[in-house]
Length: 190
Picture: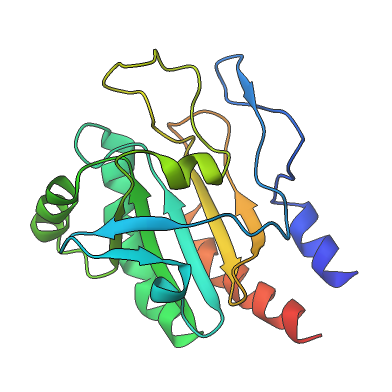
């Protein structure tokens, strides 16, 4: 009951349409789903959920691009401020975009990012998460970008929570991410 209350105020459930701030709607992840995660690190290593998860789970920030999206770049830099808190509570911090690994590596190095950056160039994981922005023209530079979201995956690989905002310019508050992870850990213990 407590878990449902915590999640209800900030999380979107699958099957529910959600406006993106531009009059478009899209479905979101279902709590309890176990979407396949396969991505490439900046070193070229293909990883799955078990490779990136902390003891209590993984926070995966789906972002449009660290090459051309100023909102995504700002969020990625700000995320560094919560990495230590998440790790201390048993959660890993990861960001995933459709950018190539070398693009991710360049941005991470220039910005001093120390958390995991994941490349999903074919948008397979973005699709598995049901977060592809289908309003983009197929074959265009923007084809394959996700709707920005923060996905909390429990240690068993299931979706525990999803946070998003309308549109792409506003993102969920970074400072609230460790608190959400902690509340999900507490709810899982009960």
